[in-house]
Image (cartoon, rainbow, N blue to C red):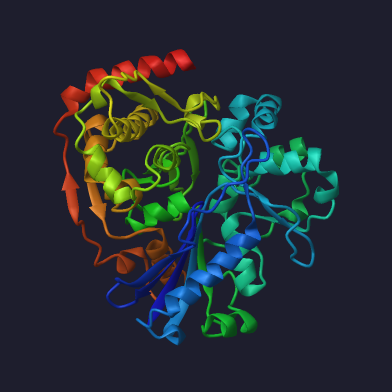
Length: 491
């Protein structure tokens, strides 16, 4: 018996099949092989086509099946993880009305700031736990204000994972966790926020049916099952944003536990049982996958837009013919401090932890007689680690004080050099695990379908594969302080 996990990433779609009994990944693929383009029609804009996500999801599943490592007919449930905060809008026939405005798009920042002030900053933070910012609700308000002909045709709004579930099942649902990441949820009254809906003049009928996160969100349609060689009627029984799902995949479910990821964006995510918020909304609080009215578990999320995206930019422009493994080895040959090079990796939209400021990415301190290609890539890794430290210090101000951080051995954490730099700069030990987002989604599906009794059962064979502890923290501290001074001047 197997479970299928789908991870709708910004760069690609990743799908995995997990064996129910062993809880291990049997097979995994991603599609396409090349990173998916982000459309930027104007500075600060970021869009992708939901239909491309769907096409790539189907191709990924077919590619997975073609490995012949499992019987696709024995897949009993499907789970979905997805890039957070994106806006998908469809009409009554479930036709997509425009490209998705995705997570790193900055066009709605001003609208969000106006809503923050009009509703009242204290009221927003106490009820929404965040400023409306450039999250999904504000993106929808932008469509209403700038594309009224599109807005008037909307039947339902969705996050990216809701859309893929709709294409699989024909059903449109959402959850409290999903609504909270869109800043539609009032935690104080446990309902869709009247303040947000009324301020923006949004239509309540556009909100899909709200279901528990671990629940049946629809059953696989016959035509789709036939095309994908799956069994008709199996449930889509789990949907979660990529960061709550990453935490789930690392068994970060209890208050005090902390997860991290360093993909296109970088995230530190801590679970709390205290309804808390950052007064400047530099870090954000959402409903965790385990949130309920009885157990109000929230996820405090630090997001850095420019992590893997910064590394990709450096690769494409300084070493387009080298693969990431070679780059990681090259970076490891440079000394701590990269011979004076410093990188601010903030070139992928407005950064929430910088109060929605956009500094642009910067490469500083170049010595034409000393610096090499290795220095550049080490400096990029160090700049990313410094940005994690900067954000973690904000989280510490808000009561999240991890002694250990868990992460999947994936993306930037595949680099031993980056992983050790992360540990040295933050001063926090790191545990690395095999699980990734698509595996977490598969296990989540098992919980939602009742195949596992609970999360404890789903993760009983979860084990750490590598532990790193700080070694060079003292050497990095003055370099980080210099980097921080440069960042503050840029702000």
